[in-house]
Image (cartoon, rainbow, N blue to C red; front, top):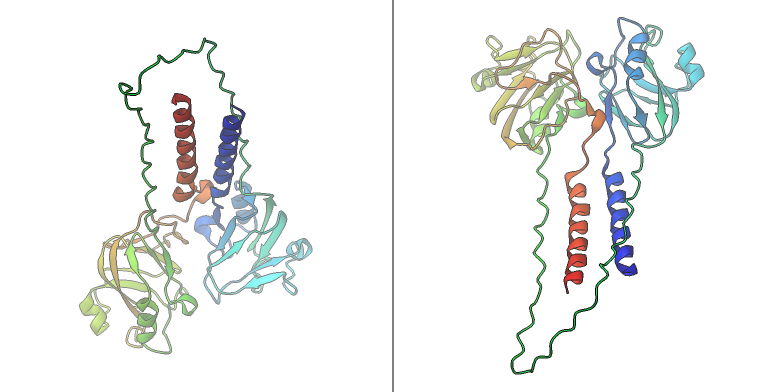
Length: 347
């Protein structure tokens, strides 16, 4: 009996541990639809955004900004209060950027571009110790057998003794492999969405080693007023004809979710940009299991695509789902343990 109780307690502890490990960290898109920019309402805009959030070690801050227009630097409290940009703890100049929170306590961020901090592009948050509280392990109750006299088996001669029954534990079906999840692709990566120095081959080289699926998101990172992104037909793509695009988005960064399979064609409609190589053709196949949150909201003033759809909102990962594969493991272990325990009692 003591051995059985020890086994039950051990599996309960393993189950609790795996549940704790499988809790994923949260990703917070700084400012949500506001993104990381100079806010019209001053520093109160980011303070109000942070006030409704809980930040923990292991969480991720996603600063969504256009490269060349903003930056994000972690600074001391004194530098934060005075908007001193001279000695940041760390600085990132290429957007969008993910920053993982690795320590508890107060963290301070600002943009180092002239006057941006003074105009309100600054964020202060408080980080707690862990991503989720550890669940209390379950306490196993002892199983008390009924008090009854033992039953003596009748004597049976070897020639007439029935064949002993053999108990076979049912086979446990293996956990299904998780389907691939949707991905977010930053078009051109650090090159962004601009006129490439290497011509059209630059974007085709970027796309060649990637697999695009329905549910994935393309992020076109460009400077407003200098570029745009238009979805077009193959004929317009081949001839750089900007007259009749399927849809056009003129505010960057632009997030476009791939909603149907097949060939997709994009270009910038600014004069001469397509002919100099600012064009992209991709092939979209299949579908992903569950689209990941887009990293930018649909830009205001953008037209809605008939095929691909801009992401309507930034991710809201306040309650990140645990991994399906990890969640299946403790259930399987516990099922096997209880099956063995019940089998031994029957025998």
